[in-house]
Image (cartoon, rainbow, N blue to C red):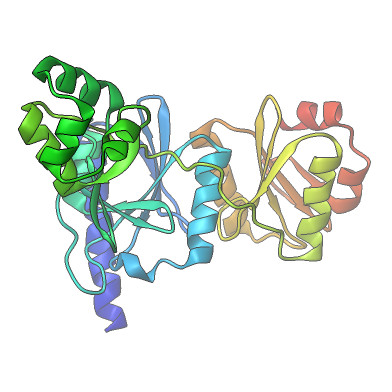
Length: 297
């Protein structure tokens, strides 16, 4: 069973790569928390490929959210099914607020056509555009109260949807669109909003984390990636902090840093033979912010 799942996941990754190459999108393959990093226009996309999206854990989702938020990027999970059914085309499935979709939907997303329907356990939902709704209703000469009665919802519901972008059950939005003879939905927001901060797991990571905080940088911790700390000021430093650092970790960080065009830093107990700027824990403690910036640039 495990072997079969691994093979299915490999096939999905091959399809994702094929889509990126079809649209001439730059990408790199990586490992760990995410599988592929791509540059879509001016936005970075971190892609995790997984066969069953219900196998995503809350911890994994938190880490993916923090990457997305820290680097102003999209994080997308491409999968094939949930525990009970295949993923359907043109639908976003949310797992712990992480957008998940099948290969066909990913291709449409890459081509510029964002899915408009979200699937939750409570049903299917869309976002109603307040301006479209109000404009179409007024042009039809229908009051909020009349429209509400036609649809079978409260007047308050129509009022709220005309004043802010809110989710609505798909069947409600479809009914409104039919009555007004005008599409009223808008694209989903793929951005992660204010993810829950993660705490460093080890004492060594906490020391490095506190150093960045002490010199006035915004710090986010991420577990399972090629970097475990993102320190932000006017630049974003991708940092991997560990007592001892394996060669493959260095190569992975260098590859990601070069692709994202962000400076990288290694912090360990002792010196590291690497092209990536590196410091020991003790050297880092004595470093000013100005010298840090000079080192990683």
